[in-house]
Image (cartoon, rainbow, N blue to C red; front, side, top):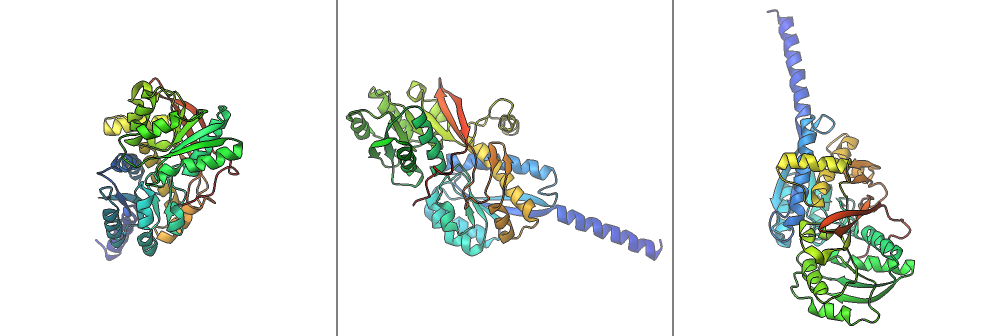
Length: 386
């Protein structure tokens, strides 16, 4: 074989290796989330949906045909101290991106680590509108924000003819204070807040709160809460057992099989969430692929949130055209429209909390009944507050 032919073959092989290397380049995503503990029912299904989307993206050659998504998961055990440890570990390992836990208080506590390392990060399912404020441009929310959900809740309540609302809140975490945003919007629309009850997370007995509500005269037209498991089931059991039939409006924390398995006591409960698999929709098609992939049905909106989260990250990287963290962060903050299975998602001009549809669901005979899908009037949405 001639020297010139050897050189040509060598050049072709080198080019092929370089092309293969480019296609196989990893984009490493660290997940500092809960696989165990009270947060696991929220973080873990997000990763299930994310992993399915990641598999589909990688099967097509990766993001823009150049970057393969690689996921590294660490369990924070639903503990603040452990969450800080694993977030620092992932930062030290040089991950390109972070999925941080659903509880905003834990994320706020690790904001300094994330900002120092300049790692763009998105919470798995936090709806906190304050989350990006401590992240200095590096931390983004994923679910419909508390103030946006509350705006949809208040608008719905007012349109139903409700004029007097009672709030049930817990000061223990930011999410369970969502009804305070409801109050702002509801009063702006012309409604009144006639009382507020406080509870502690994991409170087994709501007798005092139930008695307080039942003693009100006149009775409220609606109870508004962002309680989730195990608090919401404990409250609604005792509330309905007292004989009260006052309607209840809640947040996306109760979008779970537990709510639909409580029988008649949750009949008519209305809550906001991120999506609903209407027949023929891309969300419904996702449900079929999820079933085929995992051999079990998707029973929580968190699966869909995770799937869309992967699409958001992939779109940001493709837009940036690089894995540089600052470039990816900038691209993410300027995403105009990502066509997610739950609806179109926008980050441009949102200061880190996405504009995305808020869906209202009614519990009807143990099933989810679609009520509405909307993006709230920006003029009504209250400003974030700690």
